[in-house]
Image (cartoon, rainbow, N blue to C red; front, side, top):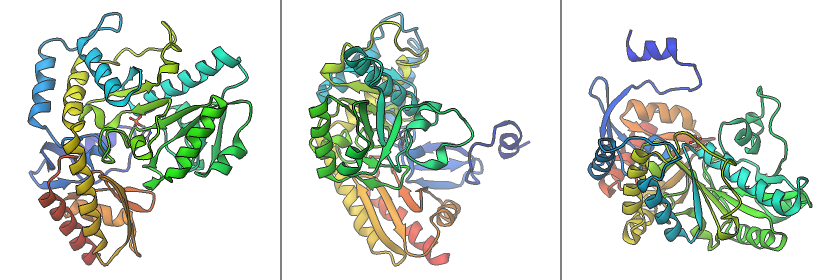
Length: 388
Ligand SMILES: *Cc1c(COP(=O)(O)O)cnc(C)c1O
């Protein structure tokens, strides 16, 4: 049996896959089992921040793997402590809690917000307002927090205590009550279609949350770690959230999630309130430390911004492109009258790994992609659009 047959027989069918089995990669290029080359502007959904098998990242991870590969959280882990310190000093947030994925990081944020409110106001104040069109993960509670009806099927009963609002302040206020303990947003909704929230809305939300001691959570699982041209997307909005989650791009390809909190939440979680066997793994943290050192550099981030603008201008010149929405290298492409999913499949056949978000094409290229590689991506997309 080949890879695809085995997958089909032995792996639950939870994904619609492209017809490609990837075997290796270097930089922005991946190779399939037959040796065919692909330019990747998806980064495994924004995960491979530095592309495939970046030399420094491989060295950091493999050196750590040969030193110590795991310890339980009953012991202090130097790599995790280093990473936590870096994250706090780069953001002004005060403490982190480690997880293994975006959904788990969000679960942690939900627990911290609810416990803060429980400790201070008792058990009635537990509702969280999330936004329509959001995506927060696949666990039962993060599905419950996700503001899209299609996710609220099959797996009843869902976790209670979530309300949904549109991305405007009056809509949020209409869902607000003395039971509200938190508001959960993505500053740029990724899975929801690269929807960039208004700066004034996010700032008003920050003010509203301050007035009412409501915890503002930003889910930066997709937007974090340089993706939008700032280390964290909330910086584009000149606010500091109370809780920030991040995951995808942080590990550079290894599974990690973090929930970071502002000072007032630093002591909310105490021993036995939360935990995870694999979280804060030293190999994963070594990779994340490397990624963070590279990505947090000011000129690196400036380049991400400039490349985002460069890519946008090139895409806007294509006949079939109706509009482009981007912050940094988080890019949504609206086509005039072609189906984005069909085009994505055809792009892959033509050697360009690209993904979709709702009815848009989506690009989340490695942050260190070159302008020449962006040119090549646009060329393959243009060719594919012309052929179809
Ligand atoms: C991908 C994503 C998640 C879920 O992350 P997993 O690692 O798949 O659990 C949560 N929130 C946002 C904004 C995401 O993009």
